[in-house]
Every structure is written in C-alpha cells, then in structure tokens.
Image 1 (cartoon, one colour):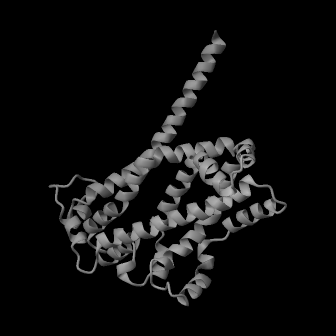
Image 2 (cartoon, rainbow, N blue to C red; image 1 turned 180 degrees about the vertical axis):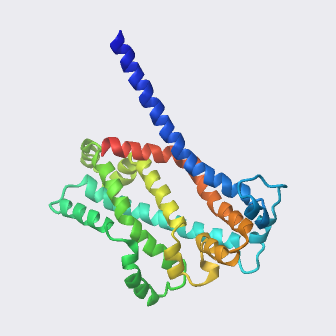
Image 3 (tube, rainbow, N blue to C red; image 1 turned 90 degrees about the vertical axis):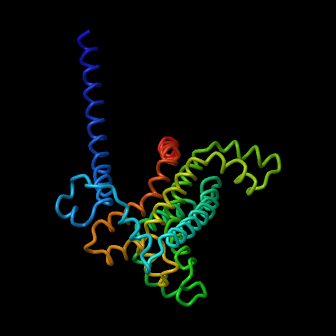
Length: 284
C-alpha cells in the first residue's frame, strides 16, 4: 500500500513538474507577443512613459500609418511573400518527395553514401553559398524576379526535407510496394497512390515548416530582390524598423501585421505538425 502511494506521489510530482515547465515556456512566448500587441495601440509617448500599462484609448493610428505609408505597400508585400513561400513549398515537397521515395523505398549500393552526403550538407550554413549563388543568378534571366529568391530557398530546404521524408518512408512496409509492382504498377503510380498518401502527415509537416522558414527568410530576399515591388513582407518589416526607428507604436503594429499570417497558419496546422513529428519519431 505504501509503495502504491509512493508510486502515485512520484507520478504526480513528475506531472506537476512537467506542466510547470511547459507553462513557463509558454509564458516566455505569449507574454512578449501580448506586450507587442497591446503597445501597437499606444502612441510612442505612452510606450516610453509606461511600456507595460494598458493603452489610455484603443486607437488604430499606428496600423493606418504603416498601411498607408507612400513608400510601402503591405498588401503587395504580403502577395510577394505568399508567391515566394508558396512556390518554395511546392518545389520542395515535389523534389524532396521524389528524392525521398527513391532513397527510402529502393535499395541501392550507394544509398548509405547518399545519406552521408545529406547529413553533411545539413552542416553547411546557408550564407556560405550566398556569394556563388548570387553570382550565378545575376547572370541568368531570372535576376530581379521572384524566381531569384525561390530557387535558392528550394535548394536550401531540400536536404532537411529529404532527410525527414526518407526516414518516414523507410518505415513503411515494403509489402505494399511489392504487391503494387506485381500487379503492374509503375514507380510513379506507387509514389502517387500509395507512398505519398501514407506519408501525408510528414509531407504536411515539411510543407508547413518550409513555409515558415521561407516567410521569415530576410537575408535571401534582401540579397536577390532589389526591387521594392518584388520584396516580401519580412523585408518591408526591416524597412519599417529603419523608417520608424523612434515611432515605437508603428513598429509594434508592423510586427503584429507581419506575424498574423504565421499565427493563423500555426493554429490551423498545429495538429498536422504534431502528428507528422510524432509519427516520424515513432516510426523513424
């Protein structure tokens, strides 16, 4: 009886400790976000005077300022972001999916070497390839277009995506492919009708993570896109920080406007991300 009570006491203490850590971690993320949101409705004078107080009156002046500034077009910047990030997701999912299918569902003599190359490429920082990529793209017709930012981002996300998808696909039963091939199915049919549907949680996870990384990729956009009409919202946010360096209210409003799409995406897709990561952890 005493042993049962001790065991339950240990389980309760472990559960309490776990939730205390999780709640503390959540607060470190939520509180700064709430602070920025509240201050986006305040004037710079109010923020400087008392940055943690509630606004004296709810006003949308800061949002009107950044949305109507003559040198900035937030609507155009959002469109550019979705064009670039959406294209990157489609390219990565297609190329990484096919590569992972070849590495994960077929057995080749050089498969282990391909795995080693993928892991080695993950250790190379993206800025190490920035100069040769820029020199190459500057000589191509795509210079200054959205494709100039899309192609480097696709290449930069391939190794990570292929590694995740390969590990997941290798966990699928080989009998599924063998039965389909014996019935006359082609490899493309097996990939599109069997492997890809079964790997949907991991494809969703990869797509969401790639979209978030592409949406926040400031360096690539600044290097390859010099025209303001082609630049995504992350570059516009950087410009707002320079233009409104002392207008803290407008800066807070710009931050909120920029992160709202990511928050919506996270709320909608968090279940898929958790399913994909959990399935990969259990099966991989």
